[in-house]
Amino acid sequence: MTSNYILLQAAQQGNFFTSWGLIIILFVVFYFFMIRPQQKRQKEIRKFRESLTKGDNVVTAGGIHGKIVDVNDNDNYFLLEIASGVRIRIDKGSVYPSAAEASQAAEQSDKK
Image (cartoon, rainbow, N blue to C red; front, side):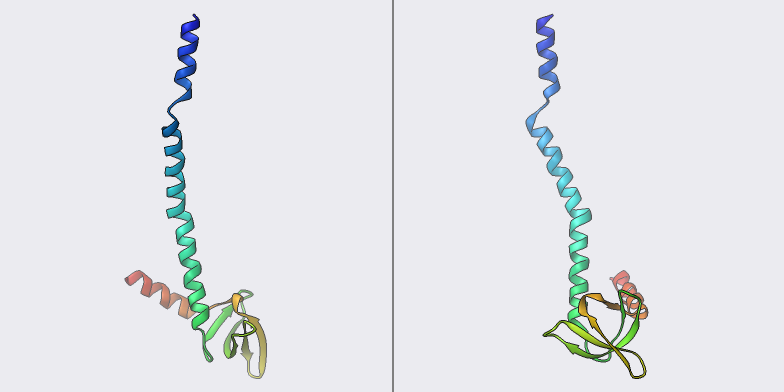
């Protein structure tokens, strides 16, 4: 009876390397399907924001469409003209490509 009890306890523990191997495999899968694509997307957005120049059409995070009138790299903002004679100051972090440019970029990435 006692020997059966000892054998059952030993069988339940499992292999140390098998349990750690499973954890490592889960982390690798999580990295390649979640973390890496997000880092890639953030890098593309950062590159887009750095490439913006005067005259580009953009959409802000709040949904305001406008044309960039001035770029201030020192203070990290754009001067955006949303209507004739109406200009607002927008932080660079809240600017996205216009819908037309976004669809063109998506089509180009699908062709690659």
